[in-house]
Length: 127
Image (cartoon, rainbow, N blue to C red):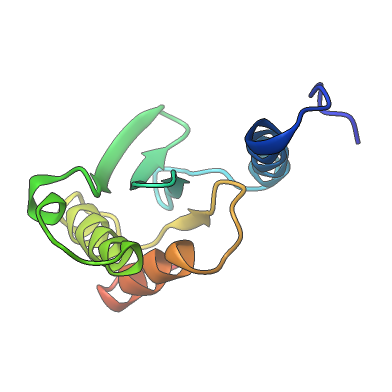
């Protein structure tokens, strides 16, 4: 199970574990023109969601907590993730995307990741 990672400590170990899991997920998950990939990138402060067509290498839609419509809010991170999910779904539908493949980016499907996915589903994006 070696993915070319050194044995690390603390936060560096955690980031390396997330990277390993993401590599395993990306072996199976890929986006096409008909069904692009919705990838989620999470940091301690922010969350970013992008709808990517992997065959062309283009980002079709994106949203993050750094957007001006979300950034000014004084809400917790889970509710910000819900706003990002709804916004990326709205932008994806405007770009003509109806269904996506969800890529959690090596993170656990819980908390902010699940909140973003649920909000995108409620906004009409099919997984």
